[in-house]
Amino acid sequence: MPCKTLKRTAITAISVLMTVSAPAIAQTANHATSSVVNHKEHAHEPVLVNEADVQARELSDWEADWQSVYPFLQDGTLDAVLAHKAEDAERTVEEFRAYYDAGYATDVGRILIDGSKVTFFRDGLPVQGLYENDGYEILTYESGNQGVRYIFEKSGGDAKAPQFIQFSDHITVPAKAEHFHLYWGDDRAELLKEVTNWPTYFPANMTGAEIAANMLAH
Image: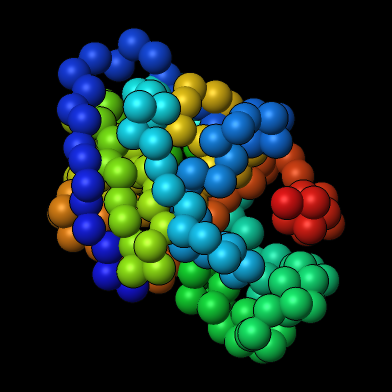
């Protein structure tokens, strides 16, 4: 799904780490202004971002141990979530399954964020990069919805670690994350065009049933 960049605000200091935690997502008024608002199935009016409300964030907002939700989609744990989404939508359960299968798909089952260090685990094997703030982008999607991606660029670490990581959650101000969608790659501009694959991560200490319940609550 094509999108265009409306704004890029360069962030030259890493003083206020980005915040995207579970309680914050539930409490913030900016819950709907994420860069993945194009995932919303029942919106009648485009979800727009008020640029004046968007604030710089730092990596500490996502500092935690995270697990991919993709295995829970594959093993049926999220079936109730798909059924709920299909109740008053134009898509069937199987269509939703295909949509999220493409969106959640990843071979990175775990991500550990500690200070400026981000460690990606593929098949249990770690690849680590050091990242510094590279601003944010306000995007407009084909649907008319808008969202924000918070961007970090690699400043050191393993050669195999991606050059850029881009966070998308449902918050546009400093706050701790409950979950997030992460985009990664070596081309900043091209990565901003990616809207079909958005690997999604929840805290590593949550069970699949707890993650499903969280999704149903939102």
